[in-house]
Length: 259
Ligand code: GLN
Image (cartoon, rainbow, N blue to C red):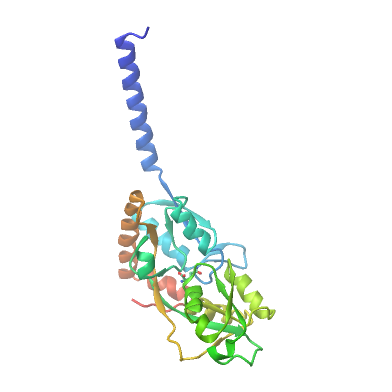
C-alpha cells in the first residue's frame, strides 16, 4: 500500500516535472512554417543548391526581430495549405494571396507584396493572342491557387479546359512542350521566370480584368495556439517595413516594393 506521504511526494514530483517540461517546450518552441517548393523569387533553389527567396528572407528577418525559432517545410502550395489545415504546420508563407474566401478559414498578416494573375504561353507560340484563342484548348493551372481559380472563373466563357499541376516548373514545362497551350500564374513569378529564360511569354488581353491580390502570412483561424505566431509576425513585419529591411529584400530579388 502506498502511504499518504509517499503519494504526496509522488504528486509533487510529477507536478514539478510537468512544469519543467512546459517551461522547456515554450522556450524551445520551434514553429513549423510550410512553403512552396518553387515559386521564384519568393522561394526556390538557387544555382548553389540553397533554398532561398524573398519569403524566406522576410521570415528570417521577422523571426530574428521577434526572437522565435522555426523550421521551414517546402511542401508545394497546395500541400502547404493542407499541412496548415491538418495542424502539421503552424503557418504558411508561400506568396499566398489574401482573399476574402480564405479569410473565412485563415488569419492573415498585413500584406507584404501586391500581385495579379497573368496568362503565359510558349515563347514561340504566335497563335494565342487573347482569351478567345483558348477556345477548345487545354490550359494549365496550379492546384489550389488563385491562378487556378481565375482560370476556372472564365473557362466556360472562353470554352477551354484546365489541367492541374502541383508546382509551377512542371506547369511551365507542360506549356513549353505544347501539351497545354497556356498557364495561369502570378505576375511577379512569371515576370521573374521570363528574365531567367523559362521559355514563356505573357499574353496581354484586357478583356478580363485579372484579379489582383496581396501576399500575406497565414495561420489557421481555428488553431488558437498559432495566433501568437501571427501577432509576432505582424509586429516583425511592421518593423521591417518601417526600418527599410523589407524594401531591401524586395530590391535584392528585383521585386516591386509596394508599401
Ligand atoms: N498567390 C497564389 C495563391 O495564393 C499562388 C501562390 C503559390 O503558387 N505559391 O493562390
